[in-house]
Amino acid sequence: MKIAIFSDVHANLAALQAVQNDIDRVGVSARLCLGDSVGYGADPRACLDLLLQSCDVLLAGNHDLAAAGRLSLDRFSGLARHAVDYARALLTEPQRKRLAEMHDEEWWGDLLLVHASPADPAEFPYVRDAEAARAQFDARQFRAAFYGHTHLPLAFEDDGERVGLTARPRLELKAGMRYLCNVGSVGQPRDQDPRACWALYDSDARTVAFRRVAYDIEATTARIKEAGLPEALAARLLVGV
Image (cartoon, rainbow, N blue to C red):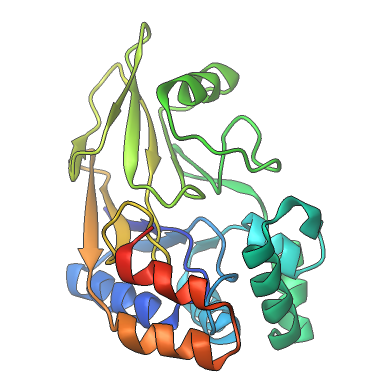
């Protein structure tokens, strides 16, 4: 079984459509989105509708909950608050209600799915290094967990003695090991590669492959500027930071 796992669309419709097209070409049995459908980008309404129609799992990220009024804006930077306010104004009441009802974690078979953290799924910490990953492995039992939030595609491996980090484009999940995999970001990559990112999990081969997809970034940045959002949100898409 092949499963598409992705996160952090952030209202980037062109990137989401490009990823959906790539997923269609590969052919998968399920599509799992780990949250932050909205925020930063210019098309929260269209992105959320597409995700609701196409995804087998759609989690709530911190931007989603803020747009739904379930999370305080005090926890966001100025740029992020501006984008959340924009999303709140543009989303319909039924859409905001759906966001407010979404879960912050789910199991898909033996895979644990969260937006930011297996240890604290409702608190949204940033797991970016081996020390932070160690706390995740210690807090919960899982063979493989998938998350987003940091926008950095990578994986942590726990052999029972030490936790290592890898950014290889393809990862084999070995017997006796535990894994915490970040699927990167569809709509706002931050690993200096501006292409959209998603992960393909193969349950038979026990592999995770990170795929990069080009999309029309120039048109997307123009949409952000036309929407009256801060130009910094457009500029960062061009360089993937």
